Image 1 (cartoon, rainbow, N blue to C red):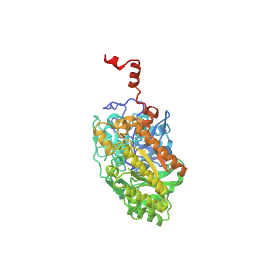
Image 2: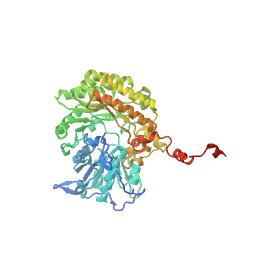
Image 3: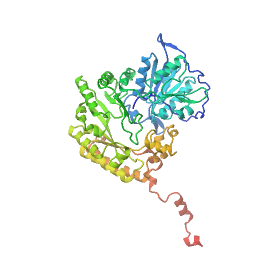
Image 4: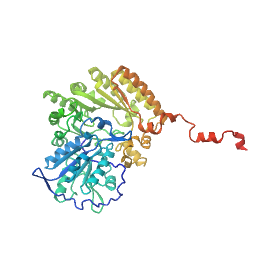
Length: 534
């Protein structure tokens, strides 16, 4: 959720470039031609792409998850655009999330004279980002491409070896991307650009040193995201960052900065929030999404933020992520209630052994105490408690415990419940362990449809398909009962895993005598066992 450089790729139906890519058609020198736009001297013209999460739905490529509903604009891309403009560069934002497509036809004219293309993505949008790379290359073989975001950060060497790109920014891009532009427009020497991975003329991959993480007060000093360029009426709300990182390191989590947390100073954050609110009329709902990994990390700080908001007579409608124990400290839940549209509580497991194994640093008692407090304040319906089922160590018994506990919270306190199947996403401790055992790899995320990959699903979830169907039947009955009480249908949400739906449909899971057994029945028809023995 942080602006790691905001860049990335996807490949779809095209032959991969060779392992050691030849650079025919690519610039032999990195120095860029200086160009003039609007009668002013512009150092570098950059086109920044924001690719959406996309998958095939009934044979067509369509946005999925939060990008299907266009929840909020990609904070990193719009922030980096503002920073580059502050350095005198000309920037075009190619917001494919807002466009709802993987196609970049509308930006072809901008590509003709640009000096640099930036693409940013997570692992979930990586296939679309690869698609963008191939489209850029068809239009311009000579323009340098720089990637950023968590997926390129993790797999910079693989990407530079396999795909037609020149640069990857690892980690934060606020300082690195302007430094890259400066290097390209001057002498082309990128060896001093922090956080940069790149290919030398002889094909070697060079990884420049990582600069220390950007401090909170420095984060507050950057220009605001350029939401003035935001298309009107497309996104539900806006996005803003109050802190970066998370002090925890949960086993399933793939966020960038774990065991690391930096906060913007309270007054300076509210300054940014207030300034961003001027653009809320460009959105459908006016909500402000605080994109911190955990907004509630320092409950006392959050209370201070709320009191500054109140003192300025601001009326933001906020969404954010919070931890259950934090909601109980410093009267945080009560203080922030008037500004809260909705929020997510990462509950994860419904049994203490699972919470300890995940590394959540909470307990079922804390989760229930938080739900009880939210009910007392009359805001429990604004809270979504998110649970993961099918973690690698879980049997049917553990999954049942989580579901029973989740339904107890819904029934007793009226909090919303999200039940989500575990999915192997790069960057987590669980994923890393599987990769080290050569069970999975980063190459499995290059194509559309990895959400539906049975092997990838079963590498994380050990439950047999029949039990997955039984769990779905149980939750379906619970949802039917819940929907009778809450007709809007939002209080219990559960998705059936597509790989099981596709490869183990209900019609075959009970056919124990299919396949070889059926052949044996045909082969042995009319033959006595004694005849076979003799």
